[in-house]
Image (cartoon, rainbow, N blue to C red; front, side, top):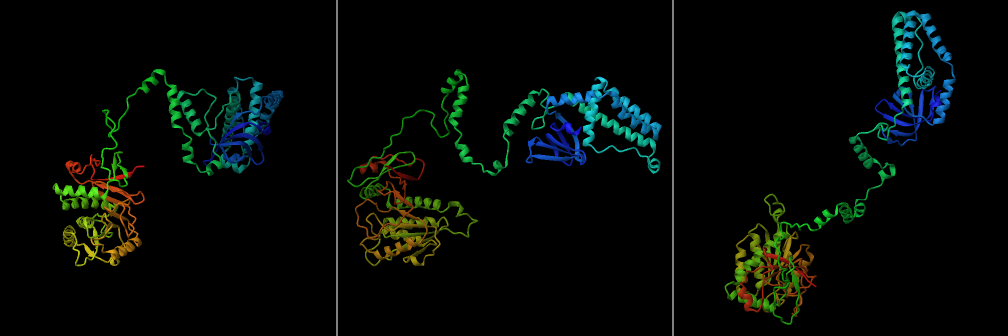
Length: 546
């Protein structure tokens, strides 16, 4: 009868922690006590193997889910019903006679047990119940081990006793009968399970339906080896998501009244935005007189335009500020203070000047000419020394005539009071540097008054070109001015300009503007209409406008 159950859908619980196997029976081997299933689901998921063979000794529970076809069931039922009841009773009678010959007491217990079996199967017709019991029992016996015969030897009888042997045999018959009845009930109303092992034959509750839908949405796609081996492309998947289309789809599901209300929702402002409406700012608030020189228009971060000025106009502005009380020495202090802040920020700031970072001292070399720009470079070196920065001032060895400017001499005397070093030959400077400050040239392109210092310019240019340290140019001459220049400028990263910028090409470097506290009347005295573009900052970056 084992071949009659080939094709049935079964659910097998296997011991040893292997879990549940579900599939269709393709073969049953009674000699080896094995069952082979295909279309295998292991613990609710498709298994990698096409067929699985299970030993009967490893089976904990076996449940028949469905039969293969209705016509095979009818034929099988007809074959079973055609057997007379007397034949089935004859199967039981030899066993009872064999047991009665050995022990009358076990025979009485065996007959009593069979009467209890028949009483449990009494709701069904006698022929049909007997046929179901016989057919299903044959399958159960095929999957289980062969039934042992009662002990007949004298040693076994003396060791175990006849009563215990009969009771054990009767208990085994009672357990097999219970399994037969349960299997027969499953034939009458088979249960259906999904891939997750959930019984779908009964009506699920609300929570179970929600969980089932969630699991199907999350784990509905089958996972194969190719999917696991393929690397997921997050950027490509993110590019497929159209946020605007999703928002429009969500809005389309809302009622018309809600959509109209959302359309007229008030604008939400950030913490740095003005709630009150204001007029758009005028882009150009600084107007300078035209001098015929080339002009470059810059813009700050807010979009306000800052035009460039000529060297003569800027010199006139600073000279007028000196006459109004903002002396040159005070201007040098402001320029040196702003240059120090920019240098510290470019060199790492507190990370390099912390108390726990003494093994990496900050070293800055300042190249200074004998003029006002050179005096600003010496002032910057002195203020850097006050922050713990190691500085080296490389200046021109002046002859007896001409004499250097008085401001340059005073700044150099103050610098010698610090721990800084002064030299005229850059070849003795250590190669490990953090920054180079270029203050060699004035707005006329000279290192000193009188046209001396060409050899010093060449040597410092050659040394700075071989160094890999970044360069900060302090108030360099304009790139667009028609001045004879024997020495090309060094490629700088940052250009610092006080008050108003000069005209520079975009390839020269990033332009930063230093705020000098020049009064408004001083700008008016030289014909400049001025509105401060600095805001809350002392130094601002300028971006060239096309």
